[in-house]
Image 1 (cartoon, rainbow, N blue to C red):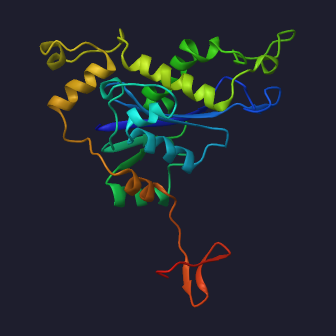
Image 2: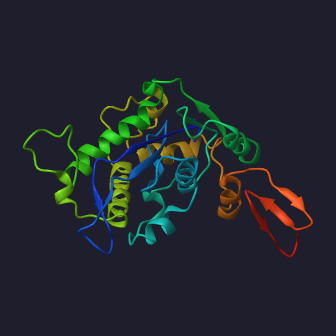
Length: 256
């Protein structure tokens, strides 16, 4: 909970329309949020829209919401310890894209979450979340119908002809993959001395549980309605006798 990393990519799979399975809708944009210390996947968002501030905020909202209720909405029953992340971090590391600007300044003021943007072309500075996309490709996406495996070669079958999953079905598979990752041993994780002394296994859920017991200073929980309000884009409006004027439209309410 000291540092989360967030990044987005175009998922290597073609999706179809939920009603008309013969109609392609494109390749979705996947945002992932990863905790640096534990390698736990704390949140994500999946959308068919272009990368944007709103899509990134949906991923951060998911990182801070109750995962038991979230998984239940996707037909998956879990216990709280299966996906324990429902917190705000101290800092979020992103690239110099949709999370650079005044909007993130508003989040820092309202939620006390700092944002750090990496230098251009320095994906290695957030290698943990970058690696998660490759993990998803190897362990899930490249085994799905309609998956894209590298550059298309002459004579190779077009993956769009094999597409069969819609957005919701792909999202459910991602949730199951995240749950599997969070309980899987990481052989490449370097255990520090204090973790070895406490006999902690390099498993994201176990590392998180150890951190909750020993290093709880950074993680914070917040009511979902307050969190949603402060993650919304902020802009200026004008209060006039005709109503609140915002982007060419007048708005009214009892309080106004």
